[in-house]
Length: 179
Image 1: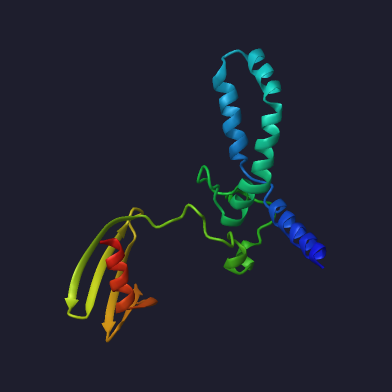
Image 2: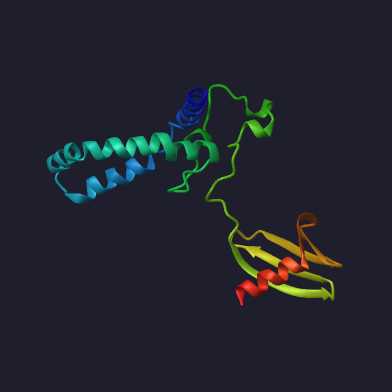
């Protein structure tokens, strides 16, 4: 039974990994850039290319099985941050995106590198039970985080949507661990 489950898991991993084999091949690109920068002579570059053949094999495997898969599923290359080649806008022979649900036209997983980096956060106390933080992200987007204490529970809202709750005991334990 364990062998059957292991085979199913292995096949699933291979299927998911190979679904992303088309991509920008960033790791291999970096090796090629090194190859070109190493020497200025085309024949020396060719010789170096032959010597690096085993390394190219490893970089292609890393690109095909890991990096390009992440690029396919997230829509961005995790190394370069560039959009996946399949998301390139161009004049196509067949246009179907307008006829599909939007979820079928974009990468299903948010980009790993698409983290909202905070540029500035300004906190103010609204009343004895409410604190507000006005957030400005590096992208220029703005958000408002509000914490409201009701008895021993604090509820947090981001732009009006409840995102979390915590107890005063948990907050005090956290504050003590940081002191």
